[in-house]
Amino acid sequence: MRNNRMLDVILVALLVGLFGLGVAYAYACERL
Picture 1 (tube, rainbow, N blue to C red):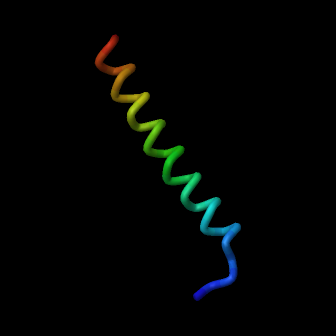
Picture 2: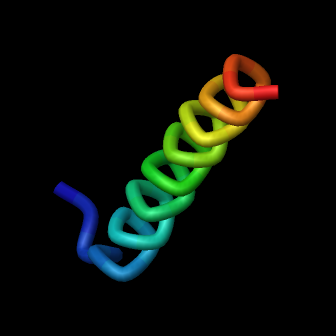
Picture 3: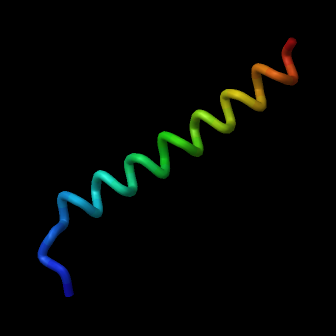
């Protein structure tokens, strides 16, 4: 098991951020 939890947290945060951006982008496209 890796000892690098900070990198895992950063990767998860990036994935969640990208997912949120995609949802917000799709929502904005539907609204326009």
